[in-house]
Amino acid sequence: MTVKYTKDHEWVRVEGDVATIGVTDHAQQQLGDVVFVELPDLGRKVEQGKEAAVVESVKAASEVFAPVSGEVVEVNHDLENEPARVNSGAETEGWFFKLRLANPAELDALMDEAAYKAYVEGLA
Amino acid sequence: MTEAPQSNAENIKTTPLHGLHLELKARMVPFAGYDMPVQYPLGILKEHQHTREKAGLFDVSHMGQVRLTGDDPAAALETLVPGDIKGLARGRMRYTLFLNEQGGILDDLMVTNAGDHLFLVVNAARKERDVAHMRERLKGKAEVELLDDLALLALQGPAAAGVLARFAPEAASMKFMSYLPATINGIPVVLTRSGYTGEDGYEISCDKSDAEPIARALLAEPEVEAIGLGARDSLRLEAGLCLYGHDIDETTTPVEAALEWALPKRRREEGGFPGHGIIKTQLAEGASRRRVGIQPEGRQPAREHTDICDTSGTKIGEVTSGGFGPTANAPVAMGYVDRAHAEVGTPVQLMVRGKPLAAKVAAMPFVPQRYYRG
Image 1 (cartoon, rainbow over the protein chains, first blue to last red):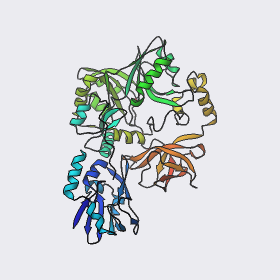
Image 2 (cartoon, one colour):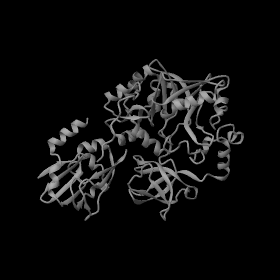
Image 3 (cartoon, one colour):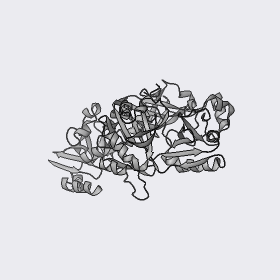
Image 4 (cartoon, rainbow over the protein chains, first blue to last red):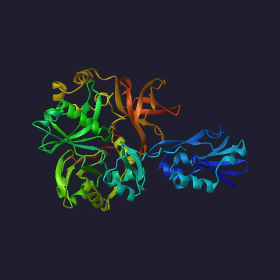
């Protein structure tokens, strides 16, 4: 199992050819209280770096970009009823959607946990 | 995810409570030229709810406090605003608007009859401009002094009166929109029973050097939490109150903005303020557009600049403030629509990221106001 991170603060966890995607704990802290999540339709093909979902806090709306390309195979409907799960468990129960990977090589360009941690510290 | 822009550290001003905000671990953002707390660790949602349930303390020292003196400062000010200032009793305050010759709103403000002077509170982003405007237009009629040595705090919420009465017992019997000089722990302050949340509460004007001890004394009371600008915005939006530069500006008139209540009968008839001709016509015939409340269906908020369309998809206006209302427990918004669509209950569509979101024109406030009228 591999977990990778993007500069836009998404995480992607890969198991086999399926990638689970969400926003990082740092992201949820920056967003504040999440009040709405818009998830992609099942079967939609998303491209790496393109908008795939939307997360809205009390303050503002933010795009969630696909860390890798693929086809949406599952979405976390629990977030529609309880968007605050993004705050309580950004990297666990607050996952957004799952993709069937189109090009696993795209993962190589993403950061590992240590690199992401250093990146976030560099933003402060 | 996209990162919020980082604050530009150069030329940014601070309030006398800046150190306290940092100590309280506020997240600071640039607002109207000041480095201000957008939220504390409690977070916007809980800060909002806390203010509605107990009491919140806000630093609003960035706002402009102005003293107007002269032979008849009320008559002088009436040449710039449509409010009844001459009829304002001593110790009472009122909301009014600086207007331009087209009836557009240059700023909204509070005016208090403080006896030997008028005390004005104007928006932070407009204060220099307002002062220059008054100095130019009221030359020879009134002296205009920007009170840069003052701080301004707001204590808002149902527990505000009980909390403040522990320090200044006379505050408890003040009515909504009244003014009273008092002391807090021996420190001289000027209290007004007013605010920007829809709740009962006070604004507390004091010397800059006294702001921190007063803030600390109030924050030490069990009901009081520090509240940032994020919750201030969601509180005022639920209360249906305008934010200058968003819901009202130089291109909107008081009639378009549904602020007819700030246009008293005598001034409508007599005029003597900028834009009177246009406003009189709009009062008689109606304006082509009107500020209304917008209630989106479902949970998705519609933000500022979202297009408002009729049910056939034709654009009829734009959202000027929108977000999630924690007390309403629903998305809430306000904006301008063509007059034909301004009636409460009219179905509309909001174009959110290219998709239509069903909504209705709604009555404001979204949450009942709870002012203390005695």
